[in-house]
Image (cartoon, rainbow, N blue to C red; front, side):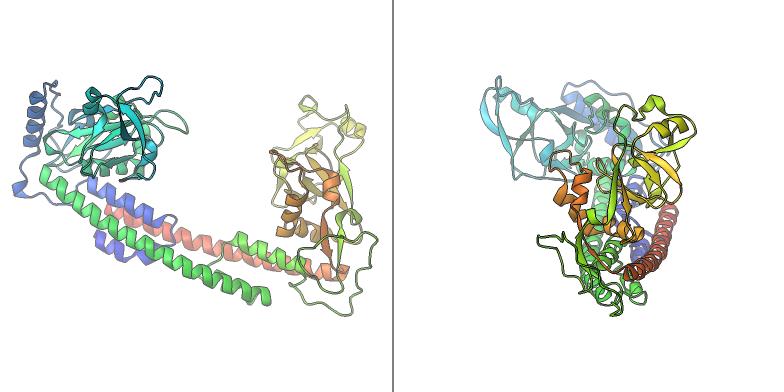
Length: 534
């Protein structure tokens, strides 16, 4: 298969995660293996280029480097598994360029004329962002070492270490100490080397030359040690031109993808509105059309929103309306509800039980290998209590607790950390809760499943925002949660709503599985095509 055929198959690959980015990585890999170019008889041997490099060093009074060729088409270095053409050679970066870092900014000690300078924040992969160029004092005798001219390769030492771009402008620019400048000997093409750094980044190989976690660093010594595949000069130029051409094609494909995604987002919104008007399983597949599928998480939120708005199932006039209460919310409610529903405070619908916070609280020293489950927020998983990595306390300790005792059918609600994370207790019959949790035990006027659907719906999320403490580390209390207000349907309608939610959520799960399978197929096809090409 040719690379051109590969691009023609793009529509089959578009669903693969990061398809265009992977295509860019493929182009760079092929380019640096000599698979995007053919050697020409007029190119001249790469050994001639190496001799010119040594002549440049002699003219500049620099130390000559050891011969940097393996004499065959394989890698001369264990640091790379790439195989290059026989007409190429491996060299160390430090043997083909003069490179150094720039000037350290020290406002108290720096002297000289103010000059524009760039930092790592101005330097990106293949281009410069010059909207916010700063100035620093620079002495005349510092200019040669700390100034870049057109054609110099500039490389980040800090930040995203190794990020590189060729300075393309006629005007000179100074640079600071977290940027390396490389000026190549013998006319070696800086754009070719820049693309090689992009390849190292795309494959992850660049990590071998970085130090540090988070904010990485690449020293001048590490930079000098990087092995570079070196073709003859004329072939370097052809490779750069071909890579530029194919990257431009990737840019167009990405733009087409973004335009298509914009159109699909509009179609998805229209489909979601259609579903909101008639939330039936028959209309659900429209939301998973292959070309504009709505993210399943957004669809689940939509289903829950419709559920608590009274739009998911039709009202039955024979349902007995919810009785008026003495403490209806006196503030503006977020939406209207059917006439036989009522807005009520959660305090009216449930009992609230905190964990025991007395001297009997089960600290870590009281945990045992088996016994009564002691549940924290990490054990709330997929709407239930997970026994994986469960903590336990003894029967005797459980008996001493004055509160926080769980029973089947309780809703456990997280007050700190993952605010609002909740689960219905169904997999265990008893247990105790950590202080970060609250037991919400529904009364007979509300179904536990309807209460759970409300708490995990966007309306439940709105209550968290309304009633948390507003500090840098938000938390809730039982008193806060009691203030939540919710739209309460008649009990028989709650049953219909819960059944409909379960039906639609099961269908979303199935459609999500199909969507994941489709994307996995596209990803596998992409991997197979890449393997065929490389």
